[in-house]
View: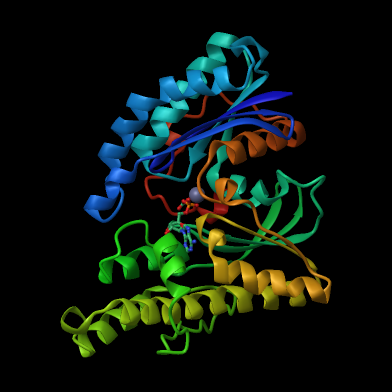
Length: 340
Ligand code: KG4
Ligand code: ZN
């Protein structure tokens, strides 16, 4: 089965072609210029997708050594994401599928992150605990079977990646903040300062990362950061901030895994590329845990994960839906849990 996947939910225009689980192409074009605005500008993102999508799709088909007529299914992110950006991909993908008379499978971006660690594995091992950590979402999910998931933890405010991005901005490190904080943390002292994350009384598996961002802000003001800043100080703040976020993500996930007696943990989404987070989870392997973390190209937004989730959805739910349109897309980029 040959699947063409398209991803345009945020600032990556990505097109991939999978031949079953074999990734023939996975082109990711990142709109790096958003960094000068300190975050993604939705209108500019949509226009860039519009400008690039046709060419990238053509290149993906050429690079895959296949013809457009070899494609069996077309899958595209339908939600959640920036509405204008989603509509570009969605309408392009639907039109292509319609013209080729092939099934069109709308894919939930979060579900694509959820299954992404298994794209390079032999098979999916159920049940597993999924930690999805991206720029828009922080979710702990108990996955019992194909498309049977229960959300056990969610963020009450900022997502983990969002906290990385906001703190990087405060430190003058640009956007996206995760990769640079990750790198600088390698030179810093994680015990330099304690930036606490909030504990949630109602549900210990929920997350809250807006408090830590505020505590970094107050700390920077207190030490008069702009006057005294130097490379060592910046690295120490990065390392201390990262330590706190990573510990929170790790501890809640492990607690959930222990509660449900599950030894398979899959971590995905952009923040799963974080070195310290990966090391923490990998250290569990000696205790018999199976840890799955996708390769960096499959952990940040990419179309291969969309194609893979589309393939699973088509195989297991027999879903093809041309009628999906802008009305199905939530106005807010946050996940609507009821419809997950
Ligand atoms: O999954 P993703 O590419 O896009 C969304 O769906 O949001 O995640 C992007 C997020 C950004 O917030 C970025 O700062 C963060 O992932 N990120 C990282 C790292 N690489 C990317 N955060 C921490 N450490 C990293 N190495
Ligand atoms: Zn994502």
